[in-house]
Length: 264
Ligand code: 5BU
Image (tube, rainbow, N blue to C red; front, top):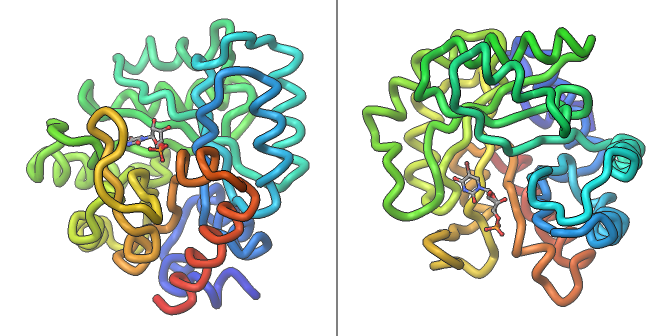
């Protein structure tokens, strides 16, 4: 199916090449699933990616979780992800001033060299987005920033006023790919979509077919409802990697997310 037909207004209103790339990948894969690959060894990461890569559209990493991280193996892992037609999204949640955030894209992990997307808080002001974008251009690459407008964890401090301030600044910034919304609550996603309009993506963690409370304050909402409420990508971790059959679970999340997009 053509991306413009599946995504309709979102496709037409989007001005970012990276957002169009994501929408096209989602159409090829028939999946709006981003896997939260929260594993602690390289071997587990390779296993997980090999078993679910065909059902997902993006791979979310926490590069600093890995016990046996090495540059060579990480490069191989990223190559495999790109061969599987996936965007790589480092959920680093940058928050420092622009100059330092730019440098934090370098260092040992060199996030700017392999990430297509990263998360950032806007708490330090809008220059963080420029700093992150500079890091990608330093590396001769393109990338997009997902700003945290909401979070899924209980007791978080990203209240309604903060959310609308972030959206106001982010929706007009060309370096912003979109916003993180609270997938555990469809009403929150719907409100966020109203504020954002069609020009930017909303990606939502905090989704699981088993809704309710997760570990250590995580909360889960229904993935189908999140997409119906305006989420463009469901970020699923435990729902896939914690399942007895991760490949089957990934396929199930893919199917329901794609169905919801077409119904929406
Ligand atoms: P889970 O296993 O589906 O609960 O994993 C959720 C992932 O999404 C995990 O990697 C978190 O770092 C990430 N996350 C989140 O859960 N909630 C948020 O508000 C943000 C990120 Br931002």
